[in-house]
Image 1: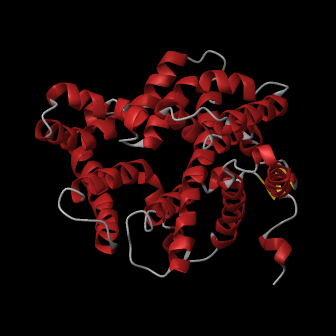
Image 2: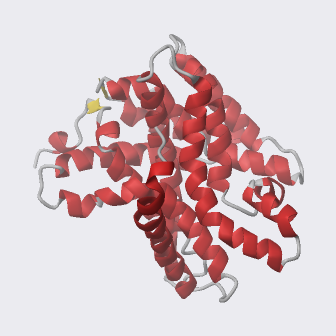
Length: 330
């Protein structure tokens, strides 16, 4: 077998778009599995350690999302209505979130006596920024979408790679800067260090769209990792996004190679990638409900995954089939 045909030296960046859905599917599977240790699953340590690497699935999702945002903006041209664009992004995120999460938080707020004030406190993500309670990923994604027009202008200019480098340094410096015991700032820092893949995806969007070939895509993650490990100031910086970038590149190439096989649709689980957001929200709801009735453990972990699938199914197959006419977005 010729390895260069499977992993070419000059990588076709277009693979990151062509195999976007399988990459999204892979990312949500990684996310579902990575909670094993924190959910108290009784598995061998080596298995738990491997599954915990699924945390990188978030970074893969953000990379592909960044590329997707470039496509979405660039196809609208220079006369884009930024307010309309932001609104369409927020609708895509908030509609399934509000529909799936609201019933639980209504019950929870009534149960703990906080009433309507408590409901809005939890459903608005305020609880996440102040108490670390809530869907951190969506709490990050919403402000990220709001500032994407500015990021797009910076990362699609003639100096986009310089701007990318500056943004990455700023993000890494802020994320490790000591601020003491301040919950809100600490939470902002914990979110910021997950943004590099989104910035990179937005920056390389034009090259991906043009299916340009480059060998640097392999070298950049490795070089970045070595640099961050060399300087003591950055040794504590989260580096999972670097490996996630490399994994996404390699798996997109693997999907390209596998696409000629009859097993492609089975192995890559194409359809899962279409419901990544709903599965993620469903996982959060499942955990919130299950923890009311049972403790952490293997059953809790497995049932939360099953619950995630059930809620995603209910939203996409049941709810949208009934109300799809009123919930169309671009």
